[in-house]
Image 1 (cartoon, rainbow, N blue to C red):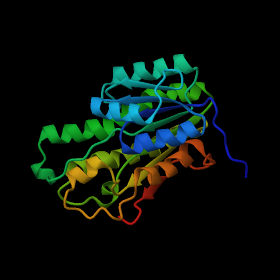
Image 2: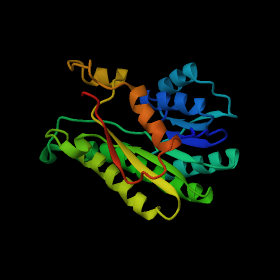
Image 3: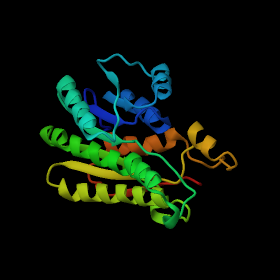
Length: 240
């Protein structure tokens, strides 16, 4: 089978400066993609710039809050105007907060998890879909969590928000099946990043999958020969 070459295609990575986003960016650039990447934390932007050539012609980096619907819509419009197209969108913004059951989850924690995990994905997809359709099709990718399936106690807000991401992706997959837009979700258990190790300092991370291992699956879904796959929630647990 001939390998797809994506020279000139455009991918948007919201929250793309984290471990998974950076690994995916490396893979997509190697395939010939032009990238538009958002960040929120300056430290992550600096790290991304150290590992990628940000030149505003092939890889652009913008500070955008994906929980701000107007901001993410303006960013999508900027990318489409600058590059003339959007072929793929990966919504990588997310966060974790544990330690609370439903009855003990305060409004601030609940809203924070909804913002980071679900609203960011919803606003990103709502802003991206018209551009993908205008391009004649494309691919969207979301990131949920095994917690959405296992629903462990003590992580209520996170579980609920991540389950919403799966529902969002499956809904979009049905809505867009006539528009040549595929929509899929990665479902990791944990990813071996510095942030995850800091959050779980006593965990045994030997068997955790690396960002690049998961990015390989993401690359296949948004740049590879995966056009018949849509509406899937794909476990990328590794041995975790």
